[in-house]
Image (cartoon, rainbow, N blue to C red; front, top):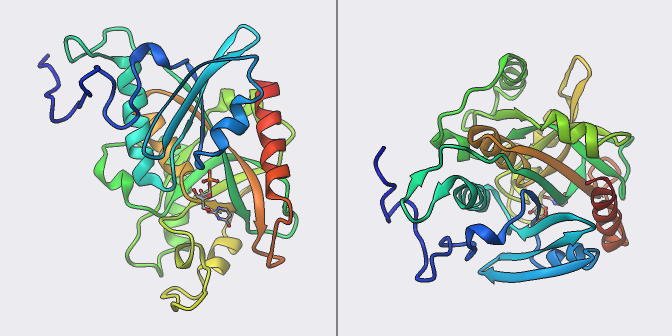
Length: 287
Ligand SMILES: O=P(O)(O)O[C@H]1O[C@H](CO)[C@@H](O)[C@H]1O
Ligand SMILES: O=c1cc[nH]c(=O)[nH]1
C-alpha cells in the first residue's frame, strides 16, 4: 500500500485535517451534523460537559459528553459540496494513520446524524413537524465523481425515480437508504419518507422569486412521485450526499429534518428556532 500523498490528504502544520482543523483524538464515534454554524452551540448547550471547541471557515466543532457518551457536533455549511469535505475528512480522522498516511487495518464506522431544516412537499406533513429520511434522493452532481453501488432496493427505486423525472435531461438522481439501525433507534414514531436533496435553494427547489424556472413543474413532479409505500416527502440540501458518502465509506447515517416550510400550504414557520430545538432535544434524548 502506498502512503496517501500530501496533495490528497492535506494536514495543517499542527497535523490537524485541512478544512475541519481537527486532530484524530478530537472526535467521538457519534457525530451530529448541522448546516448552520450557529446551531452547533444550540446542540452542545445540552451536553453535560463540553471539552473541545474548534473551527475553521463554516466548520465549527464542539465535542463533549452526555452522561457517559462522548458526542461531537459539527457544522457543515450549506450544500453537498461541503458534505464532500466533511465526510471525507471525518473518515480520514478515524480511518487513516496520519503518521504513516496509510489506511488503518481496522476501520471505524461512525454514527453520523444530521439535524437539519427542510421544506415539506405534502399537506399531511405540516410545518413544524419532525421527519426522518428513509432514503435520500440527490439531484446534485456529487456522486457522479465517486464509485458507488446501490443495493437492489436502492437500484429499483432509482430506476423508477429516473423514469418519473426523465423530462429533466440534465440530472440523473442518485438514491441511498439511511441507516436502518439509526432509523430504528432515533427515527421511530416520526413521519418518514424520501428526502430530496437539491443543488440550490431557489429554482432547484421549485421556488421562483425573479429569475424564471427552467423546470416549472419540478415541485409537482416531486409531489406526485409514488412507489409502493414510498413518496418524496421533503426538500433540503445535504442528506443525499451524507447518505451516499457514508455508505461508500462504511459509516451509519441518519437525517432528522425540522420542517420549516410547507410547500403545499405556501407557508413558512413563524417560530423556526422552536422546531429546530425540538428536533435537537429529540435526537439527544434518543442517542
Ligand atoms: O438548516 P440546514 O441544516 O442548513 O439545512 C437546510 O437549510 C439550508 C437552506 O436554508 C440548507 O443547508 C438546507 O439543507
Ligand atoms: O424549504 C426549505 C427549508 C429549509 N431548507 C431548505 O433547503 N428548503
